[in-house]
Amino acid sequence: MTPRPQRNLSKSNAQFQRALKRLPLGVSSTFRYWGEDRTIYVARGKGGRTWDIDDNCYVDYRLGYGPAILGYADDRVDAAARKGMDVGGVFALSTERELIVADRIAKMVPAAELVRFSNSGTEAVMAALRLARAHTGRESYLLVEGGYHGLFDAAMWQADVEGWQEGGNTDPEVVPYGKGIPPTVRSLVHLTPMNDAQRLEDMFRRHGNDLAAMLIEPIQGNCCSIMANAEYVHLARELCTRYGVMLIIDEVKSGFRVGKGGIQGILGVTPDITTFAKAVANGYPIAIVAGREDVMRSFRYGGASHGGTYTAHSVSLAAADECLRILDETPALETLADYGERLKSGISSILNARGIVHSFSGHPSMFGLFFAPEPPDNYRAWKTSDYSFYDRMAHYLHDLGIICEPDSREPWFMCEAHGTDPTCLADTLRAVETAVDLTLE
Ligand code: PLP
Image 1 (tube, rainbow, N blue to C red):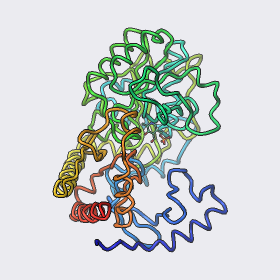
Image 2: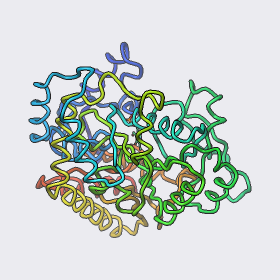
Image 3: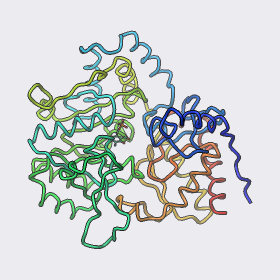
Image 4: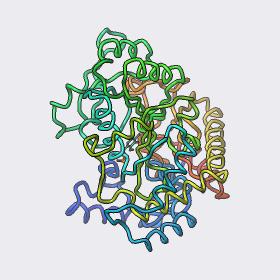
């Protein structure tokens, strides 16, 4: 019998009980609630590690859902952000650095001909969809099952796979994520499964002339890093062009992470509009809508309305300037992808030694782990698969000092600091070995 890890969470547990009285579920984002006894409160993060208020140290593969691309509290970005404070915050006017950062983005991502800043991924995607509608004069839009595009009503629709029979003629019902999303929005939403060319063509045949946009996350950063194959994305591009639909590639998670030019660079596809957020400023709140010049010029008086009190905040902009400089001019992205490869290979050795069939999806900088010979290629396949081994293993990993998502939905995220920390890899693999053995018992 492998000894069960004992993690002291007494301070977090007490904090949870206090927080519950003032904060719904004791947290500020529902996904941070991990149950009464397991919700943790963070004291600090540095590099690839996080410490909770009980002083447990974790190697962190959630990285705030991806933003900490260089690592927490990166000295270079934080120093730049401090200088950004001296500028003064927000002015209801523009600053010179907006153009400097926009130029950096356009240099790294050729499809980003023109750039607008937002504060969060949700805001950026909301603006992108409005822009597409303003540009096309159409209202409805197409989402890919398993994608997540933020918290606004238009984006919060999913395929109801429970109880649905694969192989039948009918598609799963389209349902909202939870309550409070008006059913009236439903009439504008279409959903299609990832990597199913025939269904995509059929969708465009039936609805293409009414669609303002197709939104796709080619690496589904909220669904196990399920990857679109290149043919599928190129087909989407071709159909969007043929039917006058705006192709929006949501790179809120993949942008400035999987490569300087994002997943669109890897797949060789040019969207009309792209959204970026997480890795842009190593965690400082900033997001981006970027795209083709003629489309982006619809952001104007009498066109698509866009703005926001905090857009292009001087602290976030200064952080973005430095973070993008580092990503563009140094081998940071290679370092973290190489770490991801080494981590995957270490996990594979442990699993192979125990005869456990497994596979990985996505990109080494944000990968999903599955206990099946092939990773799922769409949300339906994942939702109807057995991912209980992963869930149990993740539970043990938390107790052993590794933060990964408690279920296989979110990928493991890498940062540069994982790659430069001399012990992150060994600490992680030691914990994985124990967690796997405990899961097998
Ligand atoms: N789009 C994608 C692909 C995301 O992963 C997310 C968040 O995880 C969003 C949009 C929304 O971003 P935010 O949480 O910053 O509003």
